[in-house]
Image 1 (cartoon, rainbow, N blue to C red):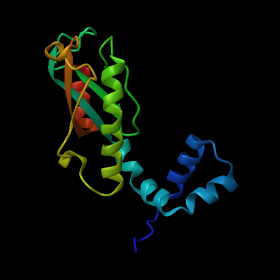
Image 2: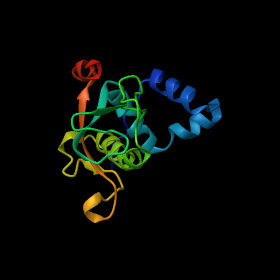
Image 3: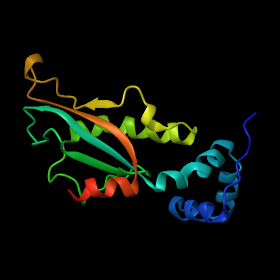
Image 4: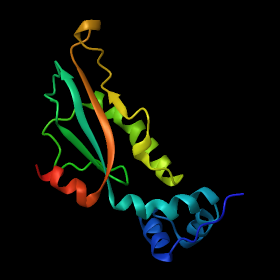
Length: 153
């Protein structure tokens, strides 16, 4: 049996505000063991930035180039301020499952940087296979303080 974590009340209050629950709904939400486990580790994700760096790019119509980075907060929010001016929906749609996996590993108490398959690619198959271009990104999770210099440059 999994221990029930002790979640500080301010975390529950923040979650209630974000989820838009009334007190009765929140009381019910708090009784679900997986919600307790996720809430106990959610504050860890607040101090993390998920970085997707382009490690391969050829023929990208949206100008994603090797070295470009996309940044997500630990809450899975795309941080648009340091983002490239154009972001391809076909690449972004493939990043989502990795963000989810990173969050799940964190909720389970596993370092998300041990993820074996930490790359995603746009759905375009590239010119070699009849498409237009291809972009591959690699994910890593950094402490916010370590990610901030990357976000500025």
